[in-house]
Image (cartoon, rainbow, N blue to C red):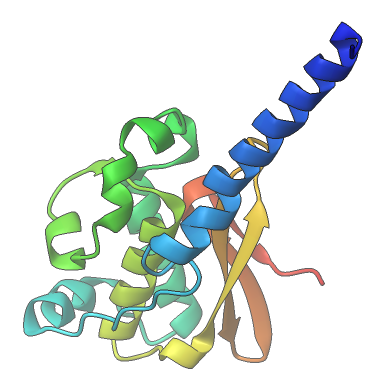
Length: 168
């Protein structure tokens, strides 16, 4: 008969593996625009009109204007408890509907809104954005962006309120 601590260790391992599968591996395969499932960037007249207010002659200023808009209007890390509570929102992809109201956004949706607005300014292209994934301190998958701008690389993570020169 196994001692109790062997059984306990078995349960701990099973729960840990299950958590990792459901919070890191599975999302990569089922959540749009997180890793493997890609959708097209929305480019509509309405989004182009909306994005005009962020546009500046200086691309870096445009980048900062859009960043300031998204961090002012949407909640992220400060309401991270909603990541699990609002799980169905991970499938929201219509940026036109998202920009209408202040709300909590998951990290990949934050990034999607950010990229969509920048592309609709006409100053940025999809190739200017590099999507990065990491495991957060909560043990869940997290997405942030590296923006290529004038030979520089800028780390942008609106969910965590990060806008800084990228250090390799």
